[in-house]
Image (cartoon, rainbow, N blue to C red; front, side):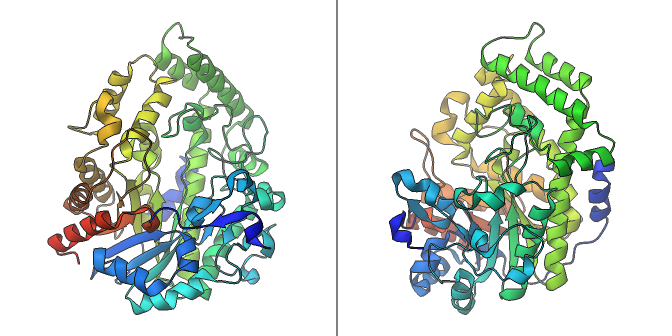
Length: 499
């Protein structure tokens, strides 16, 4: 494949359902001592610079500016921005992506995917992990594959990949966010576990971080997301595997489907300005009482993800118990009391070495406003935007944050970073799980929103450690960061004695 024909390469910027999880929580997580001293200071990075640029100067820069000792690589992705590739205009659909390391096919026997489905062709024969790990190790940097689940069905390999994606409550195969690969689909399970085993056996890695920036179908239907305007008809998942699992757990799948139909109609009417006779929240609650299967289906989705995470953990540890396995947690959890209830960090205790809650305080302003917009079009439609934000602040225990009319321009404070870090640490008290919060360094913002400065980054870093962080992940991507802002993080880490 001649990539020059279609892409332009470049670096972007510089109950019963809980039974299985409960049993896992009772198992003590193996304690890894490799990050006790020094603390982990990690940085994610897209593929393009690792495949194309000289590594020595890059790693020297990371070390000198911020004492980075761990690299989280987006080594498997079908999303151009994570690969660090800018497709040419109308040829976005021609981007292939996939595994930027070399798939070893003995680990993928029980999936419908071929070598061509998985192997990313954009950088020829370069195996990014093979290229990066020896150089990183020389600089005292451990390498972690960052497997962030794709939110878009890869167009160029659709034929086999689409078999792994969820089915909405209308029976349609999903093609992207808020849907995604189905946690209960054996083909996707086998692919994910094969990928983990491949990386663990084939490369000298320090560990693995897996992430899924999605939530259950009910919250998507209600538009309770930092991405407002989600189609309420795309509730997932009702594929054959989820329906069987639901039946095995005593859930009536047809009643759940009917409940989601009713929820969808409620949201569409709300968005059309048709206020229910008894108000929005009362109508929402009445639908839950009429269709309790909706909540049971929501719980099925949440616990299925946890079960896959536990399987990932077991697979990696079966290869090398010293590998550190952890989870990226979508920032939406910090805006949504609903998703916060579902994504209880304590439920992850038995199968985690570390957790990375995304607490991007600068970009949080615009994202939180988007969440408010979605909430007001359904459950919280009885309230004004200002009142909605105030209610959410109170529910989430956020003090002294910006009012609605200033939120986008100012973002959230360093206090938000401290509070969310402390909440995560306290949720896991008594368990050997470390919290490495993801700190905002130039995460892209929309027009009119605030921008990071070296001082604001330093404040956020200090706040994370004040909240009890045992490590830190400077986020979201090294290639997006302004050098001065990364130096701001390093200055704070030195002042704290972390590096």
